[in-house]
Image (cartoon, rainbow, N blue to C red; front, top):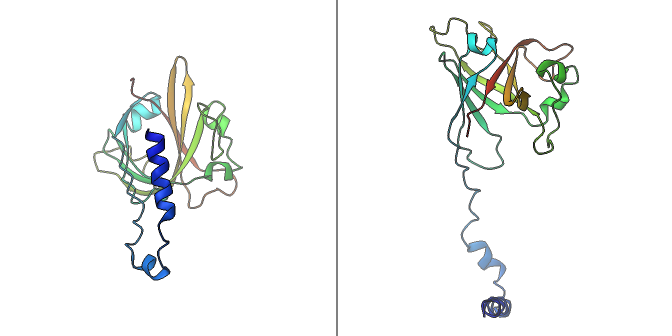
Length: 193
């Protein structure tokens, strides 16, 4: 019965006269794509000695996107109060041919734009804002120097645990010309479900 009703609606719509061009132009404008809600913030526990001494735990959140076609803006806050805002740079990891990602992160990672599901992968972020309070005596990822870019490697495995690592870079351009200026690699544990 439902199939018949649906077919009847299609047939009825097909029999209606097509609106004139002028009538189409007077209809309401097509709405913009809806804003994408931001997921809840997630806290990661500092695992590596460098992460424990410089940042402590970190909390990641994503700002609401005004349009699904706009690159996400991530907010990263450290336990020491340092605040970063970053913009995702799709395809930027694979452009950096001078970076030895395996050596940097201690294992194989996929740097293509569409990694296979479940494989360790890298996302590049442009740091657009870094706020370091006076209480953060060790500064940000690059100490007293500004952090220019971060690479986030997710899905890495350390023993029985899956981890994320953040490689921080200094410099003005990406991809880097020659050897990249690596400030450090910081490793964290995601929350347990």
